[in-house]
Amino acid sequence: MINKVKGTYDILPEESSRWQNLETTIANVSRLFNFKEIRTPIFEYSELFHRGVGESTDIIKKETYDLTDRADRMLTLRPEGTASIVRSVIENKLYADPNQPLKLYYYGPMFRYERQQKGRYRQFYQFGAEAIGAHSPLVDAEVINFAATFLEALRIKDITLKINSLGDNESKENYRNALINYLKPNVHELCGDCQRRYQENPLRVLDCKVDKNHPVLTEAPKPLDFLTDADRFHFDQVLSALDAIGLEYEIDKSLVRGLDYYTHTVFEIDTDLASLGAQSTLVGGGRYNHLFESLDGPNVPAVGFAFGIERLLLALESIEKEVAAPCIHCFMIALGDDVQESALKIVNELRHGGLICDYDFFNKNLKGKFKQSERLNPIINLIYGTEEMKHNCINVKETKSGVQETVSLDQLYPYILKLIQNQSSGCNGNCSNCDDC
Ligand code: ATP
Ligand code: MG
Image (tube, rainbow, N blue to C red; front, top):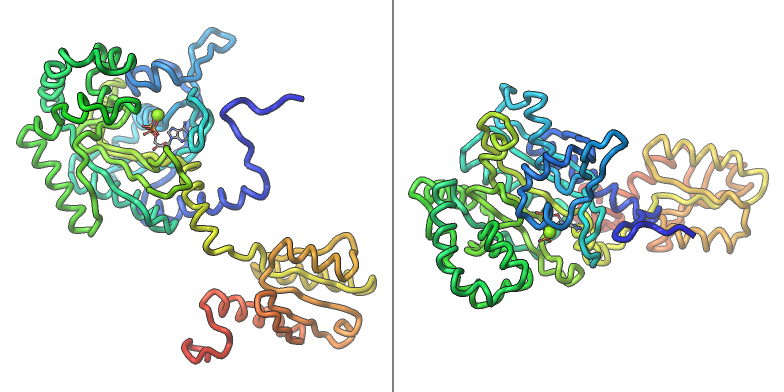
């Protein structure tokens, strides 16, 4: 038997509706913020990621899936979205769009050769957004607000927004020099990866997962203390915009994020939901003002974020348990051979009215039909036999309360709609609180 590749998973039918719900929320919230979707290929020339993500990052050092095609081209399965988006914006000259900033979002699979754990896979999905073409700190805040609003729409509440600033090139260089001087006598105490990072790109040392609580790192100089006045001003403006929106944040002076291209604002949103275990970062992002140039494009500033979808689904697990929603609206229990076609016709009409319906195609006995209904968990069971067919009516049984009514067929659709509406508003039909009672 051939099994799935290590680090991958199948999304089986009973899981797929959770993905579809998430995908709908992505599209809806993106529309609210007027971000438009962009779709790029899942593989690109390797050079794009080497230059775009950064030679010294963990992603490029250890995690890419590289391949050569039959004409010996060096290709890489995309490990993240931003480099491809920037490539496409340059190639298609989208940066010249009169609507600035250009607001784009993407959704799709990414590939990293990592050790598989809960919330960490080799093929995983990201939803990301990029606002391209504006230096304004209001745009940093807009992007952060977009990420936070998305979590709010998913009802994920136990979150912490962490934010920091690296500043632009001058601030980053000043900080880099201070960090090198500080680490020189201490670096031997840190892990092997950190020793390599120290040589190649000392900022990466702060992103170490092994030594993050080591005193050498906790006591290291922090980027915020090396910001130029202009860069400090930018950061203050971002914070003040977040204050105005009412978004709570925590300044995390050690936050640098795992990619080389960040300048100014970096942020992430973590959750303390137990279902995520160690992989508690739901989204990471930041500003990248020089990536376009390093990919031979014009000088265009940008800011973006990327969510890990699997972690969102894990976070949603605990919330979904609280509200186990019914799976479908109606299940048809048609009793007797001569009513089957007429029952199918009723089901078909309800479906055309937007109601999710299912049916027993195996002509099970009554007990078997109710068993199937239990599994499908409908809001309503429709019970239909020869007597009902003769009198043009049907029995409508609410599964939650067990209340049953006989309803004439021409009133069935509005009757069910009202019932569903009442259920979702918590009305029992006699609450004296809502408009109808
Ligand atoms: P981490 O620190 O968890 O390795 P990262 O810094 O590598 O994350 P980014 O490259 O910024 O992460 O990606 C953004 C988001 O994508 C992460 O916050 C996480 O939710 C998700 N993510 C990253 N790598 C994986 C993976 N291998 N499997 C599942 N989700 C992932
Ligand atoms: Mg990583």
